[in-house]
Amino acid sequence: MDSKNKLFKIYNGQVVTPYSIISNGTIISRNGIIEVVAEGNLETPGANEIDAQGKYIAPGLIDLQINGFAGVDFSDQNLTIDDLRKTTKALWKVGVTTFLPTVITNDQKSLKKSFLILASALDDEEIGLSIPGFHLEGPYISPIQGYRGAHLEKYIRMPVWDEFAELQKAANNRIKLITLAPEVNGAIPFIRKCREKGVVVSLGHHNGSTEIIKQAADAGASMSTHLGNGCANMIDRHCNPLWPQLADDRITATIIADGFHLNREEVQCFYKMKGVENLILVSDALDLAGLPPGEYTRGERVVLLTSDVVKFPAENCLAGAATPITTCVSNIMKFTDCSLVNAIKMASSNPARSLGLHNIGEIKQGKRADLILFAITDGRIVIQKTIVAGKII
Ligand SMILES: [Zn+2]
Image (cartoon, rainbow, N blue to C red; front, side):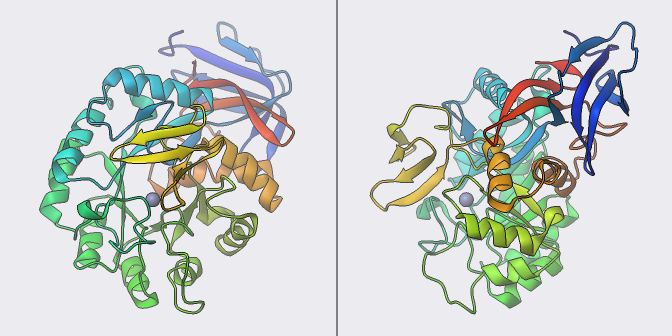
């Protein structure tokens, strides 16, 4: 089905808006843009239409941190556009309509190659709409064990603007988000420069002091990356990087609510402290997400995939997540008792707003018709149809 010059209608659904759920709602889009959101069924001759049969309709999910999916690793030096198509389609199936392929700490040559390959997807007719840009996590992070997490120490370095500029050029200027440690040499002026150039800065894999975190926020850092992870196991109960990031309202935190990276009480506390508007769900999924459990070789290391999470067996530390953001949406409702409206907000309108993606993230007139149709079975979201720009995919 072609979305161009086409009317699309989905009706008889429980429509999840940022404020409430419209029961028996209809959404009509033209040329991929939402034109009408209303109660009741509106006659729309000539529209492609879906009867939602009383199920939920929400904005498509937006994942700001995803390293790969369904066997495809976005950092793979042999990644092809076909791999990206395969992954994007697998993500559509679980309700993700927009994502930032995330590339982590590596040597400059490999990073550059990754972004050159990824940039070729941006204008792709089939999947380009789902990939507004990229997330560079590292290499300017803490080299200290515990804080560096799964990042390889040998590739961790101090921020150098020219080096980053070279990556940004390879990425066709679409590195939208960078995760860095504010305490490393040169980070504060680097953050300022990122903000000048429109790159969103998120603090992660760091051990910044209260003063440094304040300086980073003053310089324009506006997010924390997977708060509570990328942090040592043993920390000072008074002076640690968590409190100042939680206390500063200028910082929106992303969290991995997969049930492993944070426990229920941590999710509850972060939710209460940050509030619905300042919390974002991310999957941080690895390429192994969606594959059968077992031992896999990933890059230069062996990892263990269980049914829901990836570990380094030798260090017994988490290596990444293996559940899509959709599961995190279900989990946060279970952990915090928040409403479906709020859970969806943390995986759609909040990430869109934080990245300045103003055309997506809400079911509202003028936004792109990126929609998911789903049921909730035993507290879990089960995606039935995904629509991107008014096109059923
Ligand atoms: Zn990380």
